[in-house]
Image (cartoon, rainbow, N blue to C red; front, side, top):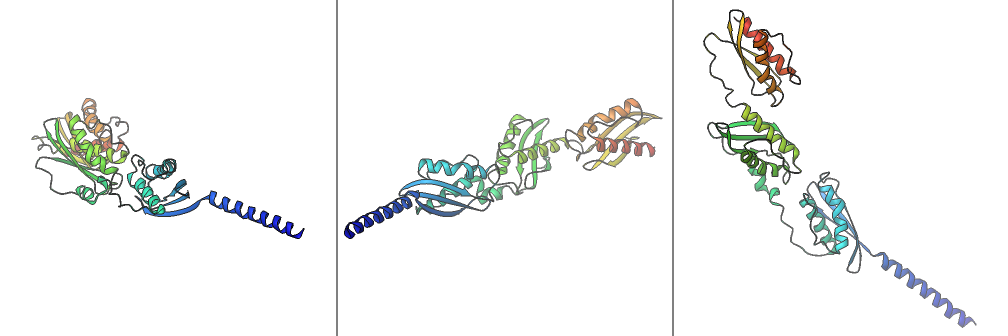
Length: 312
């Protein structure tokens, strides 16, 4: 009887140990590894069952939101689904995608040569964004604020035609803003206009390039010839810088008013530069309404005209 009980007990214990071992095996093995992403470290956690990748999660707090974060969210599932790190990266997030794949391979113990950085991320690309040679004689230059810092353009024109545009912005994000610096100037020259689509994913840098080109074009010819003999001039502070007017009079009548302000905002202050002088001439007075949305520049023009008339 005792012998029979011992046999049953041994059988039960053996079955229990077998179940525990089976459960441990089914849970798989957890592996972790880290690789360098765009903004910092990217860490992956894998659960594997033999040669099968059961699940992958990735964490990278310093990766760019809306770009690198897309790779963090999407790529692990693709790797688990393919049961391999040899999958396509997430579009626009090459560096973070490569970091996830490199970390997964490292966790699995797969040796792989470090993947080369995307061309826009190589140091050579960054140095090419730094000012190199002075602008050609007669070229127009202007600067606008980009995503990381100043973006400066050099525009060569022939009459009203844009012959060429180059842009530099050493502080723009490699692989994102740098794409706009490389691609957008050619589009503007080809279209002979800044009315072109920005580069996808690089809105800030694209807008800075277009704004700088518009300012450069607006400055064309604004270094006006000396005022005609007998003309009156006056200067006042506008929104972006000095606004200078030239006024011709006949007795107490205002015959003409011209205004220049190279640093006024294109499409805003420039509207006042173009429209307000004619209103002053028509009213034969500076008691006119300012141009909507361009109060600073309008007031500068009015103040400068008053200063010119006071010097009569």
